[in-house]
Amino acid sequence: MSTYKIDVPAKLFIAGEYAVTRLGGLALVTSLESDFQVVISEVEGHSLLETNVAMPAHAFSVKEIKPEQSGPWNFVMTAIKYMSKEVELTREFHLEIKSGLGFGENKKGYGSSACVVVGVVNALNLFFQLNLPLKKRFEIAAQAHYDVQGSGSRGDVAAIMYGGSIFYENHQRVLPLTIPWQPYVVQTAQSAKTVEKLKHQLSEAFYVKSDELVIEISTAIDMQDFALFKEKLLENQLLLIEHQAKGYMTDQLALALNIVNSQPEFAGKISGAGFGENIILFAEREDKIVELRSALEAEGMKLEKIRIGKQNE
Image 1 (cartoon, rainbow, N blue to C red):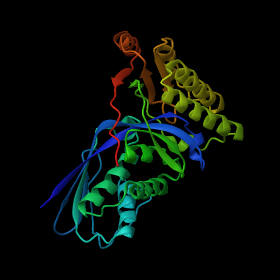
Image 2: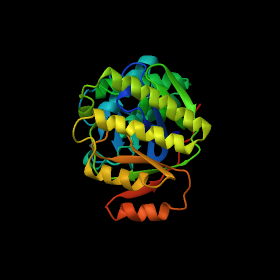
Image 3: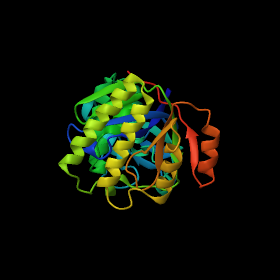
């Protein structure tokens, strides 16, 4: 009886948050290697879902799949339902999710719900030998994620499904992006809930300026011009600060940004929704990383070197 193991990367937004949630909005997103894995194998009787995080197991039959808008297995069951629309699922299976990305109040902000839908779609594609193309798998996973969450850009799903780093245009394009500088993440240990933050109304001027900056940041990356990259990245950060609700910039995030960006060889920006969680950092040179790590740890924050996920085909 065959068992398949699917390693799933996580994600961090680089630029374009919030503006990318509208049709045609732009963002830069990177995948990163993670300890998130989906394991699938055939079973007799009923299908079974299990995980190593604090959730009860869930049994069901592929003959009667009911998507759930709420409940702990909502992302998984919705992804399974969408896959069942593509092809008849003929065998019962045991699917286990092994996640080191945190859960609930302890989540790291690496896109764990997007990891779930991507992992489930890829696991079923492999288990049932469907050979669905990458674009189709992305569309299924993205729709399942959006249906449950009710908002978002699908950029996180795109980065995780395609791997590598990407230039993302909402509902339009996913283009590979090669970043020449070493990425890190600063963890503030404060969790944030994206859905609540997306209710804030933004102006047309914000959307236009954000898209312009994403293009300029992407150009700086292509030119391998770190000074220009940092300048435009910080412009995007300032734009977000100016247009977001109070609380977007927490005290810990503000402190971390000041520590990071005071050094010319480092460029840091809040990754994702803000209101806590992470800063993504790029290092032109790494000779001062030890000092930076010490400065952040002295303030109760953690600096981790990350590896960009492999590009998928």
